[in-house]
Length: 433
Image 1 (cartoon, rainbow, N blue to C red):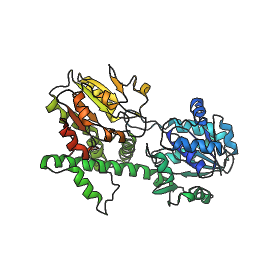
Image 2: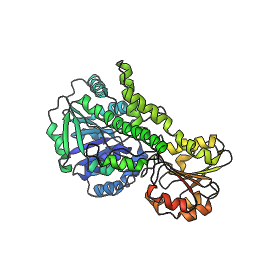
Image 3: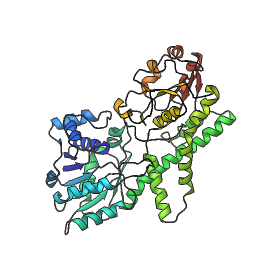
Image 4: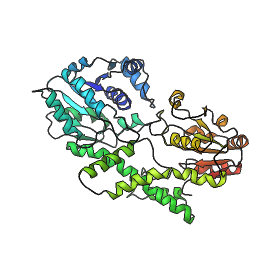
């Protein structure tokens, strides 16, 4: 099938590559010539494991190409909109870009084509899109489906190629079997729902995950007071078949990235518009907003003051395996440390160094070597870990650090190394333990 994938940031880079890998002929389209040129050279705008190999393989096979010319849409049977909706500082999604791209594409879509949207939209947006299309192109015949994307940053290829399910939202579509056939090779459960339900699935999924995290934050707070270990509690909860081994039950200093927050905000706006009370959603937002305060609360008694102290942050991106700094919790806390008079060192293997510029007012050190980053550091805070950190020599780390030598493990990633860290002479602090 010949498909135009429109919008080539994170969602588009993954959809274009993976849809081509399933045997479809894909034209990736974006007005940003730099992104298009890089993709044609196999360079993805946002790094994802396995993705560039997939892109290069399918370009060589002639199944995938990237262009800026929207008129080529006219040769495609399906138009797949994968425009990433920007998230502002308040975690609200901006939908202007998707309407701009639809308007730019609309004159070239052939009659009878299928329009599929996989951008993250607040429930009710598809109705507006369909109305917009009908108002801007009279007597245009098309099929419409909303398929919520479920791509995890840092694991996006596996999210697409090995999904737990595919949700297809449609109210009236004549060529449903064409869409179903696209996903047949994935051998997964395909759920057919109405459009509003499909839009709601994304909100509900992220809200559920956020609620699970807020729940375990509460449990972690209780664990600290009664001598329990939240990592052991979480392990036992996951062993319960009613909960499951993949449940979001990792106690931490809060979730970041903006994606969970965005869907919570969408739901809260709907509730306000419809005069509904959503106490659970409101509590989850409130819990996470205040959660990051535990980092400074826990190290303050040992550090005494942040003024003049050096603090190293391991992991600056919002999530391991991705270079994005969007709504990054480590970056937020680094800024807070600077505001309290600390010197800061930032250490991350994934981040693009230039992206940090302009984010932090004041001087900071940037490192890719963890050993170099902790020299003369009074405290090291690990929020976004990466696997290589597990192999560090903590005796060497301890020799480089300055008193009181604090290590705050904000995601309990070093749970199994706690004794090793403490024997090296470093004060280990976890969450809920």
